[in-house]
Image (tube, rainbow, N blue to C red; front, side):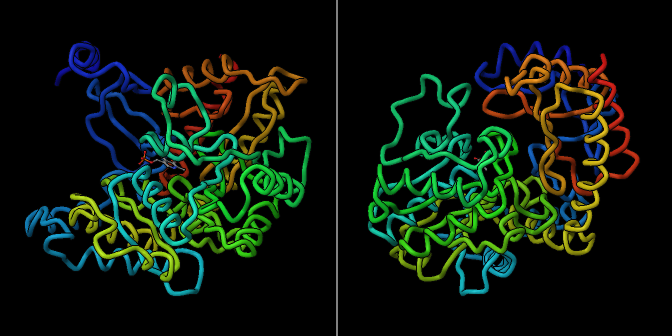
Length: 424
Ligand SMILES: *Cc1c(COP(=O)(O)O)cnc(C)c1O
């Protein structure tokens, strides 16, 4: 087999430099909680392809469903000649997402595309232009979603001009906002919107219930419910971006459930289809159906192979009770991470929920972010065979996103490597 070193050389001459990779090892195969590279080295997977393979890589039901669908037909375009699996995925989404009201769904290819469509729907339904987003938010890399995303490097740098009518307000970030309560942080955000934008000009308030790329920031309790109440009172469409948090990741089907928040619209992608590209907007039937026939769509949106994979993934989540699995991973890993933090004064906080966990690194005794140590710890993990990611506006957060089917043995092996990496 061609070695990673050789492939990396070929890549340099063929693949655009702007597309990066966390590790220079090329994958040969992957299953459950591990990857094996072309050099025969096994990796413990704490990335899950960025919270995508929640059911594990090449999950048996997914493989079977994809194989069967590929043999029947690969593409007709739902806008040309429709098929059952698209409808079935929408039924599943309408039933699984928070909120007992009547819902509709539409399917797309990527998270960014789902977010763009949620904004289109909210604008169409309200007749208002503005979109409110938060500090540290990440919503994608297309033109509109770059505008919605907070961080300049690497996502936005020199890629402007960006779309207009996007307004950014402060989020609840308990470690860094002086301990504001959820209600206080929400009041601060709402006051900013009312003073600077005006509720009647706002189509949508768009929020990740736990921020992903921005640093796995868990808002103080009460923050999301207070924003939800304000949106209800003002007629602003509350859009939860559950692209990273969805599909059992946080120990609930969707992270909004934790505080009983029912969004008007939900965007999903990543974990939905076991690794095949699929995304969706699901929400209140009156909002979704406000859009004229033909106003939403795309050539590949709800591709039949991706839909088959989604249905098989959802079955797997039920069958293996991945909600419970995420909670168990959360409790095992949180205990171990707290023990690591007790021995490392550079860890300011262990946070997250379920199998979406992070540690934030600072210079000991301060809140000054320490991206250099964060990168060094991640590199030591990679050298020892653990695939772990960093994130955060300041690049000082190590995040854990294992597949929810990871074995206890692999989970502990990975945590052993992470623990040791702080002392290498
Ligand atoms: C990854 C992500 C997106 C963008 O999804 P893509 O499929 O990469 O376009 C949007 N929002 C959140 C919260 C994400 O984590």
